[in-house]
Length: 152
Image (cartoon, rainbow, N blue to C red; front, side, top):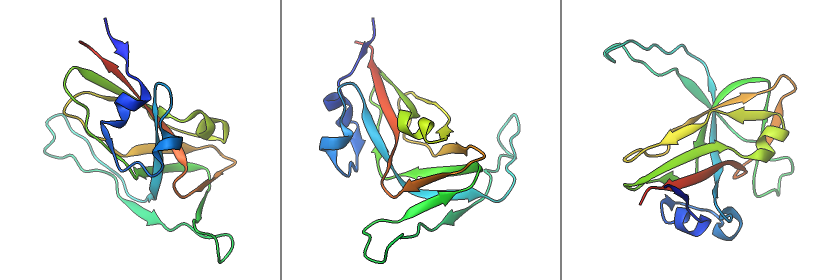
């Protein structure tokens, strides 16, 4: 029977936490936003993989709202983007990770795909969909949650 790992257990599988005290939850670890890329090119996918090509994206610079602000913001219009995280994940044997959009990201008007991470998977980029009204996201915002199930 699988069990949900504690946040402290999950944190052992995550490198690069920027503020562990805030990011480690009871049964999850929050992941933070490092970079945003606007999709600018078309990808391709075939059965065998020999013609696979990821879509291209241009990195979007964040902008500080005040000159003395330590962190900038991404002011994202409605559409699709790729997210890059500050953290890296190494899912161990006998576990499965579930990476989902943070509930605050959803309520703010955006979401990303759910990832099922099976060893030896590492953290992929997430496809962020921003609703038609847009969303503002600050650098290092907690945008995702990692939950891990252990199969002992």
